[in-house]
Image (cartoon, rainbow, N blue to C red; front, top):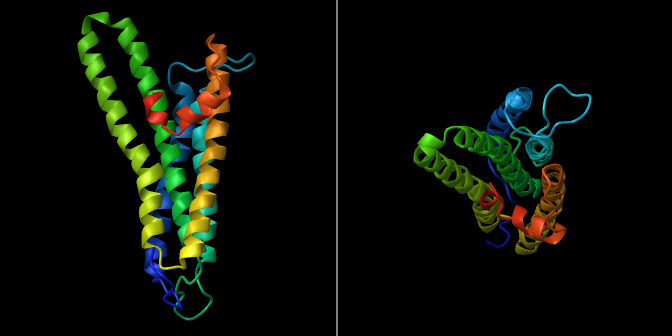
Length: 217
């Protein structure tokens, strides 16, 4: 983490590039939310015609909320002058929120897709080997992106941050606290779905498992 190089002035195009990524993420999340009720599996809820994918729904709505908060953080980081340099640590906070949003988008996509593969595999036992290859490939690809977004991206942003070391440490602690809080929320969603299927994992185990979520897929 580099020391202060006051004044910190990050080019506005750096922030704009991130806003573009968030815009794409919001579009992808909105599309997935709209079609999720057509995906097989999920929990049957009285009064609803379609099954509810509790874990995927929660992940996607969290991704949407995090994307919007990240967008606000990026805008707040820009100075009100003729150039619009990003001078506030909210720029790095936006990075951390963006990575969390991307991770939840991945979870909302790959979670139900992998569950759908398992349903097809159970019905087509004659192609069990092929289905197992597809299942493993989805977990590896999705899991790699998830781990990069959840851990690698935030670490790189904090290490390359031009702001003061204490600021970066505070942001890192805040990120870990947010990650744990979201893991707890996702664990609750997973427990709801699992209880409906007849299982009942312990809460602490469920929270810890959400920190390595792809292994659950």
